[in-house]
Each structure stands twice: as C-alpha cells, then as structure tokens.
Image (cartoon, rainbow, N blue to C red; front, side, top):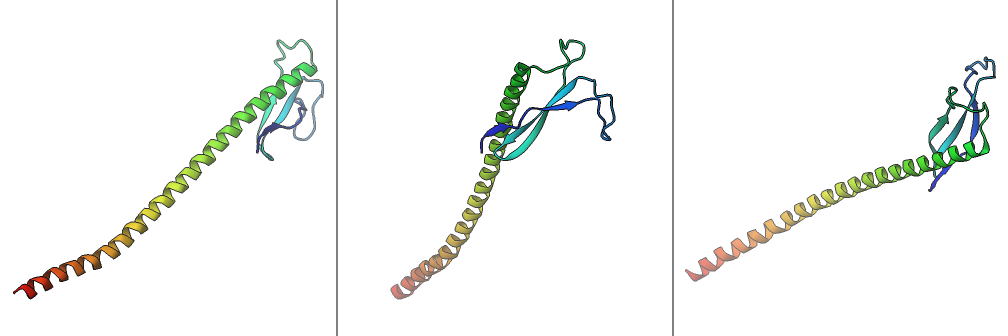
Length: 130
C-alpha cells in the first residue's frame, strides 16, 4: 500500500482530558500518517503563540501541514518497506542455510556408502590379483 494522510483536524491545547479549559487558546492541528490502510503515526502541529499572526489556521497553513504530513508518511512507508524487505531477506537467508545443511547431510549420506563400495571394490581387486 502507498502513503497517505488523513484529514487535517483541529485540536485545542486548552482542553484537558475531562473537557475542561477556556477554549480560547490557539488550536493545534492533527493529521494521521498512513501506510496503506494502517496509521503509522500522528503529526500534531501547534502554532508558536509568540509569532502567530492570527489565532486561526489559514487554508494555506492547512495545505502546507498536509503536504509535510504526506512527505513524512512517504518516508515512514519507505522505512516500513525497507524493514520488511530486510526481514524477508533474513528469512530467505535462514531458509537457504537450512537447505544447505540438509543438502550437505544428504550428500554425506550418499558419499559414505559410495566410498565404502569403492574401498570394498579395491580390496576385492587386490584379493583377486593375489
């Protein structure tokens, strides 16, 4: 699945868990960062009250937050894909090592009787020659 973002939602810094607060503080924004259908992170953005020109987010602000969130979602998605690829590689290497061990064991099982037959054949030829 590809990267994506949820909708840009308003947050209120002044509201506590119980819903209390004055409601007049500058609000933050929250965006879910998605990888496929899975939420991989939440981006919360708060304005700096010392430099905020307005207590409201403009549509340009919201668009920029959405673009930044999308870039972060792409990066997180790429990291997830890389991690999954490394896990797949480790699993394939473990299977290959397991198959190598089984093959070496099988070759040993075949080689021993063949070597015994060869040795027996040499001894038999010596006895026949005598």
